[in-house]
Length: 288
Ligand SMILES: Cc1cc2nc3c(=O)[nH]c(=O)nc-3n(C[C@H](O)[C@H](O)[C@H](O)COP(=O)(O)OP(=O)(O)OC[C@H]3O[C@@H](n4cnc5c(N)ncnc54)[C@H](O)[C@@H]3O)c2cc1C
Ligand code: FES
Image 1 (tube, helix red, strand yellow):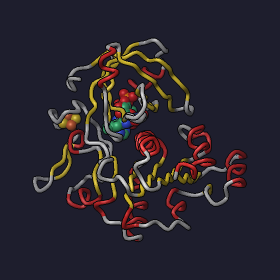
Image 2 (spheres, protein in one colour; image 1 turned 135 degrees about the vertical axis):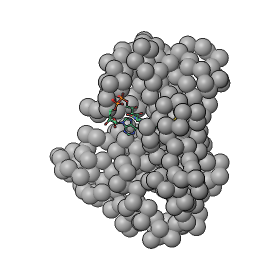
Image 3 (tube, helix red, strand yellow; image 1 turned 45 degrees about the vertical axis):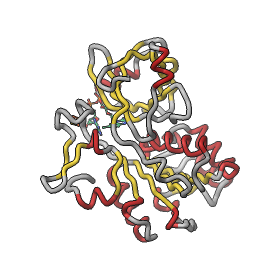
Image 4 (tube, protein in one colour; image 1 turned 90 degrees about the vertical axis):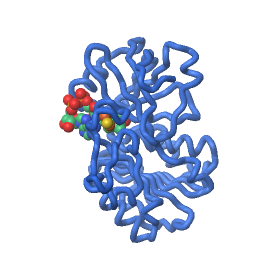
């Protein structure tokens, strides 16, 4: 697939995940492309809405499964427009772009996935890749949302909360706003569901830190607290991966729109990222 070219893809299904986010399932019109298209968890595509413009979106499906899926929050003009599009409509897709998570390097280790809100979208790709391939020791998913209604991929997450241990997976959920659904969940899973923030979910967990990697995606405020927790537990900065978002235009390192840092260390988020280690953040001004 030529990554610079936009390829038409049909929207097969549109599913409401929450009042703000919809899940789009897409299939390229070119059958050969459907067979050839592959990516790493953490990579993104640029969606081209004919006559409207383009915007970057993380692939939230796993490369082990097809067709591709995108979880899109209604944020502004273009995402509002695509939310109004119906099944059968055609959009353009170019990519995949960015580095993604180094899944091969982490094989045989524990993965600690820490998601906040919409950050669950790229981490869902990691989660299913890890569970489908079975190449990782144990997978933890710590997921914080404002309310029960905001839990993305709720059916999947609740299924793994109940049955994850059979797949070497532990899911823990934190919510901020109380509701009958949360109280009910907390009664059933008092060791894994709590009212609070995502860092509260680390309580009571003892990781084999030497053999673990953390993968974080969420709102900017979350990074500081999660990183502090991980460093306190002596996880090396090079084993902490974060996926970062910036305003982007071209997605291929040409326009300079997403550049951060100084002449000492300069990064193109679209090409060098969007996945960075905490080491990168320490050496590049403005990265987080
Ligand atoms: C690598 C990458 C991956 C992304 N993955 C996803 C995803 O999986 N799902 C998803 O819903 N969104 C994702 N986004 C954000 C998405 O690209 C923006 O929400 C979208 O471009 C907004 O377009 P718009 O025309 O609807 O909104 P605009 O009218 O352009 O903006 C509306 C609001 O959204 C904010 N906004 C716009 N772009 C961004 C951005 N990049 N980061 C944070 N805030 C932004 C603006 O500041 C404004 O407040 C990703 C962005 C990047 C860079
Ligand atoms: S978005 Fe154009 S250089 Fe990164």
